[in-house]
Length: 441
Image (cartoon, rainbow, N blue to C red; front, side, top):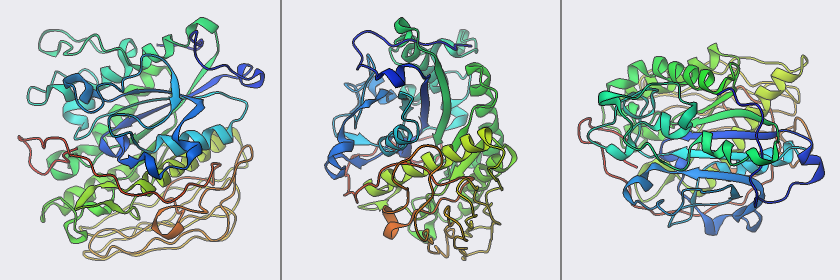
């Protein structure tokens, strides 16, 4: 796909003269149910309930079987807003707002395709056969990329859903008629809870590397920035999580792999979710509304740090912390400087977790302790600095008592503060039968 020039389809919202002169910055969001999101629209600030200045293209493969997103598949670019019967949202709402604030000369476009209860082994890998047990979760790499997917699907790998209207290639094609240049700016990936309950956890790093490499190759963007959401320590049984006792090493393996992939690739970052409040009642797989709003801002902070590292020789960078030890946790300290990257060392210990609070400077971040100990997350002191153009600083409000810490290779980003959100109650999708302990929705 080596598509470098895109156009705006007729009938889309009008562009300002300044935005028309700049490439459209397109972000791809994908993963499982914490990318789908369980945010409640009633708890969004009015200005975030519909954002027509940000283009949004959405698909959830549960629509393949008439699920709650059946009427929410995009047929054209529309405003960024919650989707589905319950009007749910994930991190895209605040992420999009932060990008619009950071890049006022660009039109921001978001393509999101996410499906609960999915994994890289059976569902998201390039060139996979259909999953015979959960057909609607099949071949999600192709469902995301469409004709940009370089794999061959024949014989037992024939496409199960060859004619879906929403894929990245179709989203881009709907922009063609006006001839606008496009920049595929980043992939945001929130996934891994599924593998944390079974043996695929121990090869998660390799499958994640292969997935990122395939995406970059097929998009023709070798240095595509990727931001990973590290799975939460809410999953540990010691923290009341849903994964069975004895599987702590699986959770450790996925969390450590996500950090390691980010540490070894200067164009990958990870963000922390350990301080996020689970979605009650008794749903430790997922987050509450305030957490999804904060996750979007952390994704934004991390992307802006990667973009700053690529565009400025003065931006500093250090690796993110790693987690280790069954039931153990890690912490990440902040770094100084308005475009500095956070870094720190991981700590371990069965049943324990320690925390390192942010350091000096206008960009401050802190990591939270892992399972078993479930240590606290230290928030930033003062305002988080902005990189790029002006916007209100991240971190002045959010979940976990206003903490804006980001255990990632990140700098302070732009965005607008978001109000605290209430709870969403939604039925979970069916649990995979053939491998126990998988995330259900």
